Image (cartoon, rainbow, N blue to C red):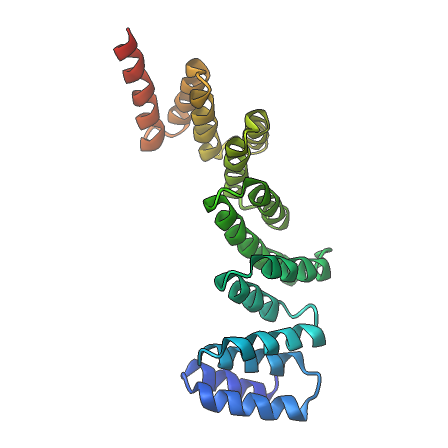
Length: 234
């Protein structure tokens, strides 16, 4: 980062956005094709509520450097916020292709940033019952950040809502096998068994959670719920 870019960043951080925009425009004229200049211009425009110019500046940054992760993330989030979900997904796809083969720690960090954005989009699809798209986005997020095990649980929920209960169980069983100490997978598997009327299997899962973590209030609550239901039936 050169001195001019640091100056623009300082202007943005101190909320002097109009000055930052003027400085970024001057930098972009001096350094034609600079992705960083276009990115900083877009950020300064965004904070002034200039959505159209912001989108154009961020697109210019990505045109100059398709691997400019910050510009890609900002653009995808902005498009998502204004309801242009397909366009946001397109930015994801293009940017992910540019970093498809992580070779270093820095690229791993980049992948995790994209995973967060795929997860946000997946949750949005799930909220509006577009489960097929949600499953696809959860899959991308899980692939980019295999350490975020909760994504696998969310994908299992989407499978279940879509009607693919067997696939949802397979997902959770596989997660339980790969990460035996990840107790939320067992809790969710118990709920899925319970929803299918498999009370015994559900209770076994919750009991295994309590055996591993006696203070797990969630598993205890589900187990008590199941036993209360059985007592009422009897």
